[in-house]
Image (cartoon, rainbow, N blue to C red; front, side):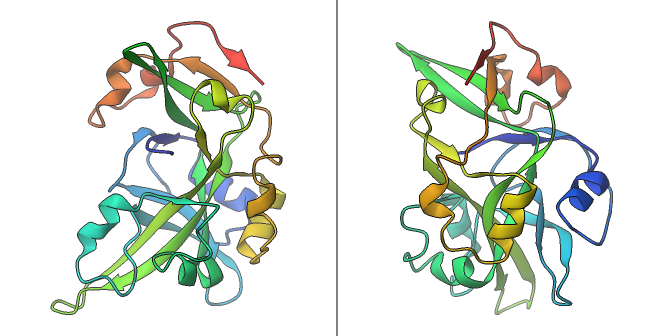
Length: 223
């Protein structure tokens, strides 16, 4: 799964890298957690792409209660095209969530050690996602939300966890947002080289923020 990540690169430049035509400032975040807002690129109504903020935890348009989103932060690549909660969004409402790195917890005996996983060149990337629009029938309030696509871990990530988010480079963002249906089956093999290092357990608490959370507390691994 992917339950925590960071995005701290300048949002305007990163959004432009992935083709967004609008730009606004997004505060750097080092410990983004479910139910919080995440920066994402999606297709705009005018045919271009736009940068938006989405609630992390997808709420299907047919849901009676938005709390269902608390259980829908990730969607499995293997079933996302068929599951009722995701299939409409998979066909028509894809997103690319802006990211500099994500966290995963490696179990060592009875202890879980958090690791920060990123690209060796420190460049931002995107995570494949879906988005939905839900309207409160009583108030008319609209909630736009998102989920992240996860896949089986590649060989490198298997040392940390058996699942991982689906990572996109600029070309991958183009293909994903264009509706390419072949990407899910090749997601693992298309994963770029990653590097990871252990970080302080303060990241376990979503209230903790700051770039000091990324400081290594042990040796980095790459693959």
